[in-house]
Each structure stands twice: as structure tokens, then as C-alpha cells.
Image (cartoon, rainbow, N blue to C red):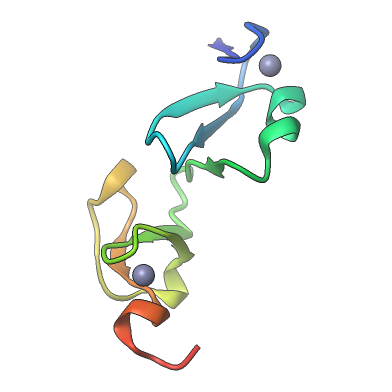
Length: 89
Ligand SMILES: [Zn+2]
Ligand SMILES: [Zn+2]
């Protein structure tokens, strides 16, 4: 069971979200997630299709990250995004 950090609603599975401004993870039910969808990032699941850029800290598709290494934050890949690696977008 997971508990929504906003309203306390309980559900078997919930989105785990990450707030870039405070660096905290929160479980959110669909309703509460909908309210803050523009402000939070979903913590990726085991499929790791997203990784973080070690320069700017942003989340990118692993295809957009170069010099990728595993085992970063949340065990997701860490690399350099196109902007930070100087590649043309
Ligand atoms: Zn909620
Ligand atoms: Zn970057």
C-alpha cells in the first residue's frame, strides 16, 4: 500500500514523484498528481528510459544522454545531455 503525501489517500500503487526544487520524493495519487503535474517529475521505474544529466541535473531520455554511466540517482543512468555535451540538439 502506498499513501498519498498530499491527501493521505491509500492505493496499491501510486506515482512516485520528484520535486526538483526541494529534491524530495512524494507518492501522489492520480488526483493530486494531476494538480502538480507541471511541477514534478515522475521517478522512473525499473525500465530506466530516463536518466539524469550530471551537469544540469535535468531528466532526459537515455537516448539523449552521452557518456552514460549507470547507478546514478535512483539507480537510473547518469550522463551528459545534448546541451551540456555541446552536441547540436
Ligand atoms: Zn492524493
Ligand atoms: Zn545537461
